[in-house]
Length: 285
Image (cartoon, rainbow, N blue to C red; front, side, top):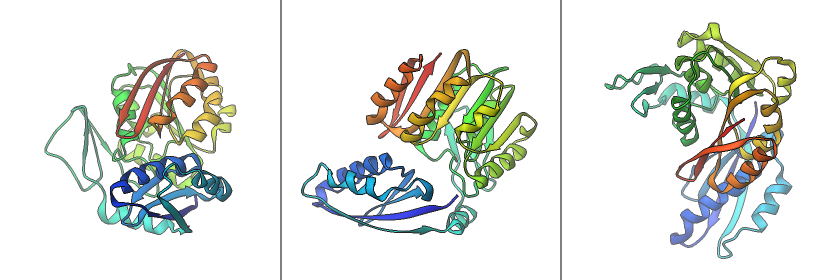
């Protein structure tokens, strides 16, 4: 999968800079951007080349709600090797969730010995547990009865949610992603966590669900808001009676849109969670 790296320059009073960054991240998220990094000049955002629409981005920026701020941006292609080299060199520190799950890479371990350990070897794929949305989703899985359940992981990334579900007792999981790097990496992580015999990793978007006859007891999707809104009908079409849908990858301000969509599809909201500006929703069918 190819990404653009877009560097946003924000000219704003110092006391307004953080608010400007937060608003800009939310607006760029509406234009398909998936992740952001704060910089001295503003933020850097990353967006799939196939999803990038400069006209939409410019329209959103024209309506920026802080008149005293001026925003410009430059765009270039993000090199895959830069992502890979960063993870190879740095990895990530262990993450402990609810004192029950430790997520770690192959080099960093914690003195804490929780009930479940998940090793993630991240190669060009999203989902190590370091992001707020991933942590919330894993936390939701911890509070979901999974023994003997079938789980669908939409936009599987590193496979972390599917692997967590299996270690929490799920009978089998299916994950799909539009990125071949991700599907390969998810299979690799399933192997090193010794759950690969119960995990299927598929390459494609939500339309691939048309080829799957089975229904699922739990569906998880940690993707950006626009994709969730577009693909939610497909998610619901694969949900068994009395099943659960867990969603994250969006901001708290996006909750009304997603909730409205879910209700229109016959789902009932059971819970919502926040971590900073990010949110997670739980629906039942």
